[in-house]
Image (cartoon, rainbow, N blue to C red; front, side, top):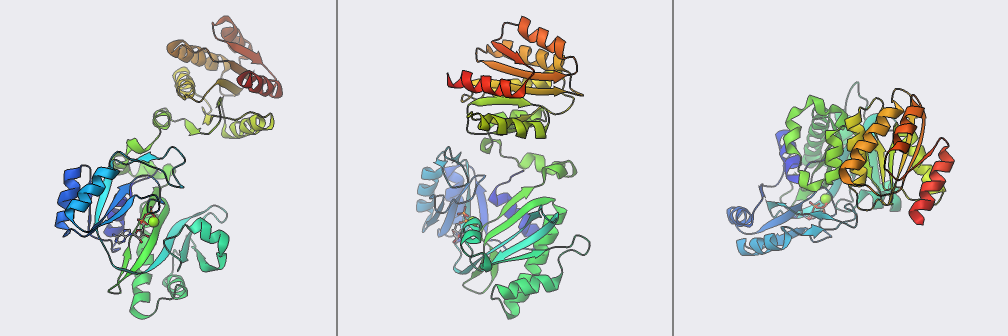
Length: 386
Ligand code: ADP
Ligand code: MG
């Protein structure tokens, strides 16, 4: 789960990590008022669920409240396209108005889950501000990584060694050790899969400050934090993904035109591979899960049909716990509600497959039924291309 920079900074502040004075604003008037409070000289920052805003014109330095108002007029409602948003971009509905800080040096600092070692790791670099992915490619030796033992946690000596390798000494180094320890505590207690401060800065008066903040919460731990629920900004999420979340479906939009409904993540991955192998292009990943009921199947099918890019649907179901007749009933219910004329290829096998097949073939849908995966894939690719 994603949150905005201003929300992430609030959390960092509650862990004693210094952040610039700032205020979230939802209207132009709020921006102007906040800028006036800041004394005019401030930074107006677009709040979207993506980074790379600076280069895309989403971070504006302004010299007066009038200039801040002007920036707000330009940014509110604008679709910001950054390397992290994809070509469709994200619409700006909230701004963060912050005091403009004099920056002497910029660093990169994050804690994230390393799936290889199944541990948190801390990543730091003296080359802050720029994209860490680009730096990792160009000069990996400039990135310092510490793997954290979950039993003993981040140790001060590890933090100190990292701070020293960033070129910090004396009081600044000790300040950085404290900041890193606090960042780790935040990561653990808030169940984050990522806490990223890019840039962490040394100010003109030699203070450390988190100038940007990105936090991702681990979705598997959300049940422990009911308070996170109201932090979500639904304007930043694809409406189809919101519906999928309500029905507890794993849905991810992709770039192609063949909608896919599959049960089981492994089978779904294999299905996407097969479609690509046969020259097709999947419009989504969708796992309806193990024992879905009819209404959940119907919701899944409607999500697929709700995507205007979809030109045909491929259903690939292995009926184990899942019953093929339930899948068929769900598809028929959904398709009758939204008046679906698209070609549908259904590859089904397993529990009550004959009943499922009969229901589909007796319906008014444009359905081709098959037991064979390769045959099914070949057919849907041909139908969509033809
Ligand atoms: P993004 O990572 O999305 O581009 P950042 O919050 O990192 O956005 O801002 C981009 C750059 O703008 C930072 O690297 C920093 O140099 C500058 N910046 C951001 N906030 C401030 C601020 N409050 N005062 C001065 N400079 C800032
Ligand atoms: Mg940044």
